[in-house]
Image (cartoon, rainbow, N blue to C red; front, side, top):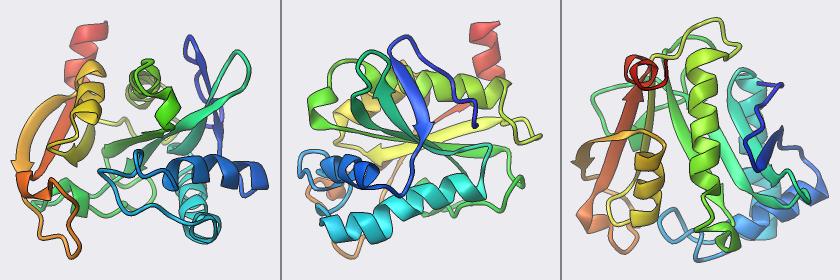
Length: 204
């Protein structure tokens, strides 16, 4: 998606292995509040060597999808990133689904991570809706996306609200045996989805 859509307030661009984007991703991954339902906070070295390259690799391996920095159209402030990752569905929990080979799936997983000072301003919902619209209508993969999925910890009420406002619907709660579980893991992970047929009924 090199021609990433603008939303009313956000511009999306590809992340790059630059000092600026290391700083941007570090502002997310080093913040315990942002990482509360994800993982332990990361160091700058971990962001520079692992986290940011992984986001860039997702875009390079899947140029129709991938990860994008979200910046305010007015002022160019970095507020976070959003992603679409092609996945290979299985009967296992979504958190265990592997990234699919290029152009070999009709299901993509929606992801987002925003700076704490950008929470509560509707940016995640706005960006998620833009990526959902893109995936179901104008994506460059040559294969129509038929389903968009997302998952989070059951206790992550904020992320669940974003999914619901973006149009995704609750599917089920699953329990994963994590090796180093976060507080709240005992309540499980929730899975959400929206199909292209549903989206078209609501938007055409």
